[in-house]
Image (tube, rainbow, N blue to C red):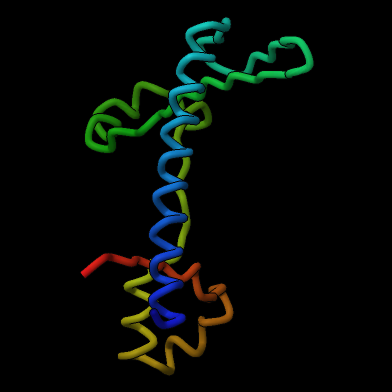
Amino acid sequence: MTNLEALARDWLIAKAEEEAARVRRLIVEEDLCAALELKSEGALTHHVGKYKITLVQNINRKLLADVWARVQDKCPQKLRPVKAKLEADPAGCKWLAANEPQIWASIADAFEIKPAKIGVKVQVG
């Protein structure tokens, strides 16, 4: 067995162990949530023996843009619970850099560009 084959095997073993641990953790979390008081939203800390267990219930809120467009005038602008998110468009950045390099060069300082974590996938066969 080559060193690379051993690394691939070790990666698969570690990935399987990681998944098994994740499943076990989720089962324990479910049991803790069933056994302890939980707020409808927010955090609640329980002291159980030498352990401090904090359960956090977040609420996800998503704006339905088409509905909001119809009802937004019912809420004064200064009270509207919406915000605009200004973010980079990766495809637009790549296109501009490739097709309009002079324009890209003039605005590139406004963007932080760095490599993301490398994805690794190993399969048998």
